[in-house]
Length: 267
Image (cartoon, rainbow, N blue to C red; front, side, top):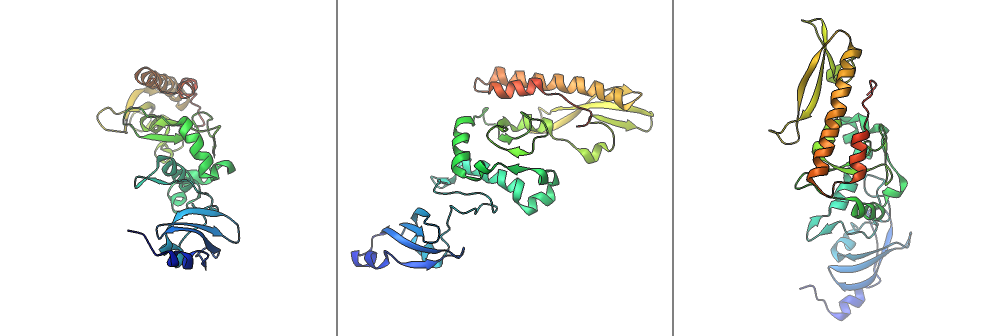
């Protein structure tokens, strides 16, 4: 289907054009119109198995430059297998998007302090870590988490990240706008003139949602918080034990981090 004459192949071999990044690129190997190797003459980087039509249009990209959200370097890593985006690329690109995409940062400003370590700018380095650490718990969605191992951490790196099921991840999301100036897990009831403590627990009837559970009524926000802290830490341990018992592959590092997690009044 993609065969061309030997003379046409010789004619195309060695052709030089300028791509949309402003780099000069040259065909150094021509198998067929869907399989050519290209060298970028300004950087000497080489990409393999490219399409001739993209080369001619100048849309072939030097993936050894930071093309993914101006930081990520794909290199010669495969980002598709059997026509599907690989999981490695999906998690890697999602991580970069959270930290460096202006639209996402305007919607989720809490990520403005977050960064990706330099080593993980390279998809090849992230993929290596991914293949050593990714696991699944049934058909649950898995999340790349950066701050359960190290609370309030803002750096995505091989030393700070773990994968956890989304149902665990949502236990640590906070609604700062809703709670106002009171400690986490506490709100003021005007009718009673008292402080209410409540804890969010996984909703078994709706996938990946939480439901508020009433703990008690207290005279001060500090008393209410202490009750919340006790119940929240107890519940996180219950969830950790559930996953440890149900899934043999649930990592001990994730289990220990959940059991050791401490709720602070400054959270």
